[in-house]
Image 1: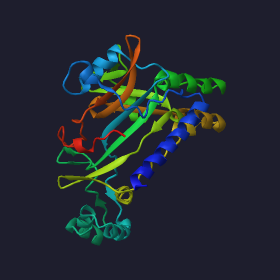
Image 2: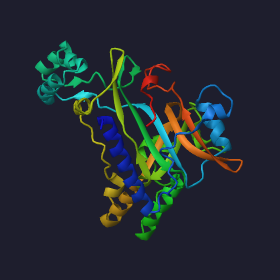
Image 3: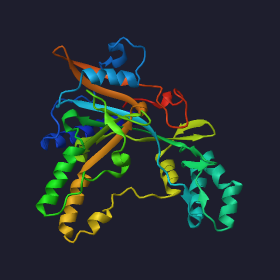
Image 4: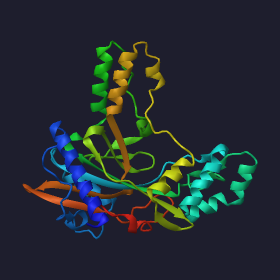
Length: 331
């Protein structure tokens, strides 16, 4: 058996086990939409040439999946990396970079800037992280492709989450904050308005359109994340070891920490319960221009029709449309 066949079989087995687990909890039905291959392009359905944001708006303003059906969404982004490399970590990082023998890493550790910072006992700025130079924002040079699958009926909104969290506040006799709690990565929820008849929102100022959903984490099946490095204009996928190195340059914690408003609560048992409820939900805010593909099923004229959306012009910040097309591969 080829290595890739074995890997695919393991992936399918893990996916089946996860589906059975979610079915036992009543979070998904047995209507498996993940491995369907005979689908109609959304743009083809509307007589358009290519899939794009307007295609999504037209499709979801007219049709939406039934609650028991699945939707798989793939998207592209720039990796969130910290910029500061601590001076005391530099010798160990040199050893790792040498062993990996990736020109992007070996050239970094042999650069004059690296040597000067190391010799002067100063920190170093990662050349791969996002930064601002002369007032100009430069995006991260590390790109990601991600995907997730969710049952349509498991898509929630902020009101659903607030209602559940508020029940814990009421249970313990605590005062519920006006307007509820706003997720840190929701940019305080300001400026966004629902696009009528669709699951999408539009920002009043920038006119950016996004898919913004809340969902219980247990009901979201995450796909494989791939990482790519743009070094001197050449983009290549990183190995797991290279990914670890990039993130080890400036370690960053992604663990959820209890906020001060809950740390200050006298009844810490209540605070822990509220914190657990808040973190049971996952918030996703996806710019529609960064969604590379969607698989879903719609009911049209009484019949179930399988659709696909594939936008090869999607690109991470810093690239032009189409420059990332070869790496957009629905899985």
